[in-house]
Length: 555
Image (cartoon, rainbow, N blue to C red; front, side, top):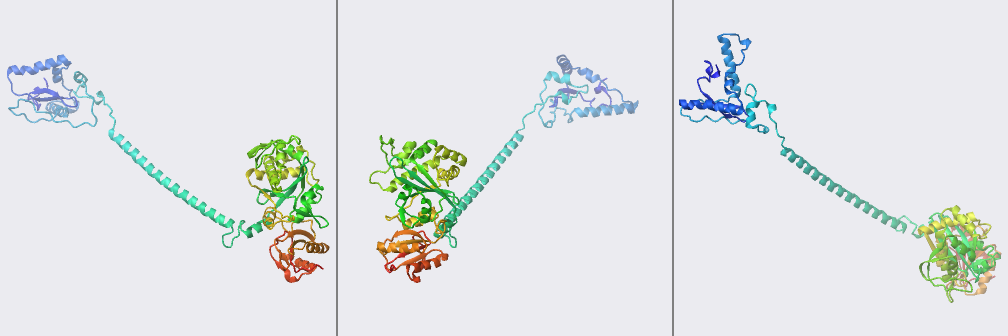
């Protein structure tokens, strides 16, 4: 007995036929319309053909009865409960169907299944019947699902990446804008500070005197510390001397070479004047003290440098490079090599000596002094920066030095000045003098006061006031008489030479208020009225300067 023959089976009165499978692989049954006896055999032939082809026991499935549940008991009630359970199970996998119409020739189509969240892999038809369970149902683990890429997630990732990149570009643009603004502010600040610094240095700011102004330069010159030595270059072959001052400005960290003409008048101990070149050739004893009197300086020592030792010094430093302004011809008799003219000429020791002492016929002395200054500058650039190494170089040179200037002191001095020369903080200047050997007004204002820092209190050797004398009478005898009167009065005489033009009234000037009383005493010594004493800038580097006019009457 199968399910269709049960008296209480709701489907027993209707003939059922397998019409296909749904989307989940489950069998679908439909109603069988009235048919003839020949047609009634068609389902049986279909079932046998299906069983032979797929190995599915359709009749066996219809005859299979579930075991009776003890919980329902026996009898009519138990059988009724069992039939109800079977009907409930059949409804779980058999889709609901509409009542058959009498004239329906084809079964009603099955309801469309709900779309699955993921597409299941299609199972071949021969495996469906074999994979079915005992209840005719299919297990989910019997199907393999293909993982497909989630296009929506990729779109989301692309959108996030685009948004992030656009945000980064905006942030980078803001960052560049801020950097440009900061750079512009820094440039403007530097421009303002530089402009104010220049105005301060030039002394153009109100109530502020910079170093570039006259007051600032004067104040700086008085407060600066300088170390200096005098160098006498003796030409042992052709004769003659050249003198220069090497200056180390400790305060401003600058160096300088001041070239002194041989025509510069320096005072002797007896008060008489003598040309610098003549004083050096006579032995140079007391020359540094005489220069201190004229220039108001404090020279620390004398370096006598003969030409053979200059040649050796240049060789010790490996030669020098000099911008030569003239070609020096060779002299076979004096064994002087030729020197070419041009920029950065490399000179050996003998060539350096020939160029430093060369003076063409008819050339002024200033030309030869400038060549000497160029050689000294080039040598200083090659001196070792270590004071001890520089001292060894000086000792190796073998020069006999002034007892007041030993090799260690000279080496330390040259190394410091050489460091200024290496970085360009160095200058070479010529001290201009008049035909009578006195300093020009311009030389007193620039070279003496600014470069040398000369002042009337710097000369330590002069115990008495230094009095400068300028003659504006046009009478040489009058100047000699006034000079004698000052020397007899115990004053240190400084020759101021002749004035550019004559003047009627005599004048006595002083710069420091502390020197007024001495200026009045000088006026009394010369027999001049006190009204001639005035405060002003001295044309001569001295405590008190007397300019004799035609009103002066020798006593």
